[in-house]
Image 1 (cartoon, rainbow, N blue to C red):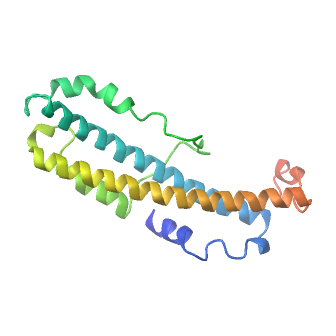
Image 2: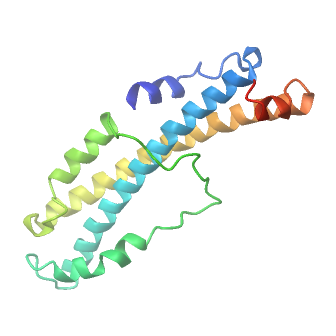
Image 3: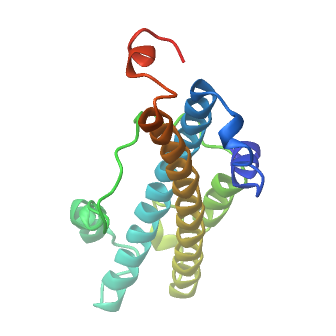
Length: 180
């Protein structure tokens, strides 16, 4: 995902939109949407792990035994359901399949979570849990920032496509017949 993300977020990615065909604009928009779907999935993975770690921190703070995580397991549906609805109107991705997650951001998630295995959080002391919670929060903010920048690209491409239809340069019949 890194090369695609870097290329899409480069300052010159949207240069020359007026010179592109509608088909090229749609292809660029699709590329942005595919990367955004991957980032959205990655962000949810980060959030889920962060929620579990902070749930464990909270459980221990209320006197829970470090090595008996049965009540944490019992609370997982509640913990993981906490962020089902994000603030704002949201956007439905064109595809729900994120594909294989790879690259620096996915590797960082793996590296962070290896220090507090999700299947055995009792192996981590309170200090390690707090450090991992902080790192996961920072990673989530970074991924969210990339997503916002991708949405800016998607919105610009969509606006150009819309303008083409409004001006009559593009026709709905072209889309329906598989053309431009």
